[in-house]
Structures are given as C-alpha cells and as structure tokens.
Image (cartoon, rainbow, N blue to C red; front, top):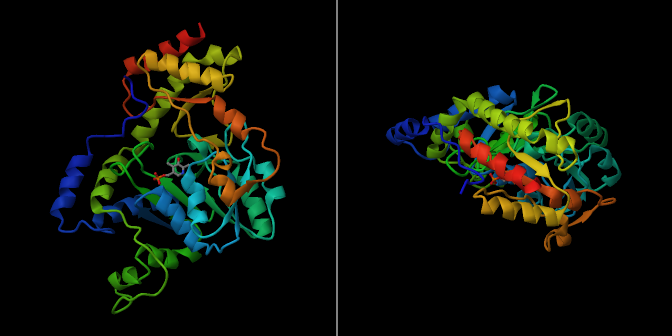
Length: 376
Ligand SMILES: *Cc1c(COP(=O)(O)O)cnc(C)c1O
C-alpha cells in the first residue's frame, strides 16, 4: 500500500538529537530551540518566533494574547481543522464562519466585511494547502475595522503571498510541525510568529506558565515570579533538534515536494482540460510550498468510488475537513454568515493524493496510473 503520507526524514536528525542528549539540558528554550527560532525569525522576517508543542497551542497562545472575552466573535472559514476554532472557543468566543472561494478553498475575502459586527475581534484566514489567502484585502479591512489578523499558516511554511512569507503578514501567524506537514519536529510541534512587537513581552510570559522566567534568564530581573495568566507552551529540546535537521535543508524539502506536485499536475493536465476533474488553482500573487496535491471530482459519490478504486490499486488517498459549521459541536459555538454556497459542495468533491518528501518516482507513477485508470 502506498501511504498517504510519510513523516519527513532527511537523515540529519539523529546527530542533532545525539548532540541534544549530550548538552545537559533537554527542557524547553535550550540551544536547539534558540537556533530554530532565530532561523524562523530570519526566514519569516517576523519580530519574534516562539516554538510551541503544536500549532493548536500556538493558536491558543494567540487567543490569549489578543485577550478574547466571552461573546467576542472570530471570523474564519468553516473548511478548516478544529483547532482553528477551538483555540477561541476555549476563551468563550463565538465563531462566525464565512464561505470559501471554490478556486483555492481559502476564505472568500469579499464575504468577510458583511460578517463583521461590533463584537468582532479577529479574522483567522487559513492558508489551505500552503496557497496564500488574499492578504492585501484582509489586512486592509482589518485595519479599517480595528481587528486582529491571526494567520493559520499550519500548512504554509516556506510559501509566499506577493513575495512575503505566509504567517508573517497578519499580527501573528501559527505553524504546525505535525508529521503530516512539510516539516516536522519529530511528530508533533508548532510555532507562533509574532509580527506586532507589542505582543512579544506577554507572549514570553504566557508561554512560561505565567512567569517572567525568560526575563530572569536574560538577567533583567533578579528572581522570577508569577506575573500573569499562562500555560506550558515549550517543546522539548529533542523536538527542536529533530526540526533543526530539517531546517538545514528546508529548500531541498520544498523543491522536492514541488517537483512531485508538478509531475502530478502534468499527468492530470488533460483530465483537467477536458473538465473531467478540477485541479488546484494557484493565484498569481501566491508561491505555494506543495503541501498538498488535490483534485476535485464531480461529487461525493464519485469521490467515494475513486477512493475505493485507488485503495484496490494499493493507493491510500484521503479527503479532508468535514466543514465545522456542519459538525454537532460547531453548530453550538458558531454561526455561518451569509449564503453557504461552496464550503460543503466543494469539500465533498476534494480528494488528496499521496505526497511526501522523498516519495519514490515509481510510487508516484503508480498513483498516476491508478487514478487515470478510474476515468478510462
Ligand atoms: C495541522 C493543522 C492544524 C493543527 O496543527 P497541530 O500542530 O497538529 O496542532 C491547525 N490548522 C490547520 C489548518 C492545520 O492544517
């Protein structure tokens, strides 16, 4: 069976993990975490980058940082992972879902403004498949209405919008290093990028269990104490060491995925041209990172048949999010604003094909042939 995903392994991870084992410190914010964070600050051009145990935790930190209060409204697409919403629901917020664009599956930027009320605090665009949302429009209307923008860039590392890294455009950005993402810190991990400097000091405190321990270690205070609300949002040095083994070849990983993506796209060109399926669409402003290769078939029924057919041929293909507003819990914590035209219909058509760093050519060829044979 060709799996849908294999966690990225470059071969550089073990030596760094051994180095971490020898350094006499394994808890958070050691030398490897520092190295990774400085790398991200350069790469993203952000004010500060904080590694976290997951993207879920980075989103929770963002919700704490903007001080979400019960009853506040947060605007986001319904076509996303539960964590995008949960982080704000945990603080008592109401979620206002807005429809997606059928071309990118990203939030439709033209539908955000009508969903804004006096309770709206933030917009959370999700860069689906590492393809950027229309951030110029989103930032302009957020500034005009005094709203925060937190980019869920879980899938967006090393991708760009108008030449700017995803996750570095809004007030904050969140990334995932889960094993299904382009880069992993050993299975689980995340990052919070802070682009608005005014959040840095509180972010350090929230991340360090509500203490000013970071200031203490820098010699800025002579003892550390409990100064605010917080939790434990530091990953272990072993996770940072694993990730460091990937950041060294971040471009190589991205370029390898882009080559696999391009090969799929070439192979399915005539299926797309004949209208048999729809392929992924990349707006001109975006430079993606090949996080995902998906096709859209006619409807749910055809998708089920295709996934079955691929399974018979030994190929594991998967679908994606069940829209949050249609889930039992989603209905109790949020509402859908405006007409729901595309979210359910387009999500039911979408099928994701296996793609991972180092995927052998013959496995890719088998995926291609099995898919083509379904439509023959
Ligand atoms: C993967 C993902 C998350 C969650 O990431 P974790 O690191 O597993 O917490 C959140 N949002 C989106 C859009 C994701 O794809």
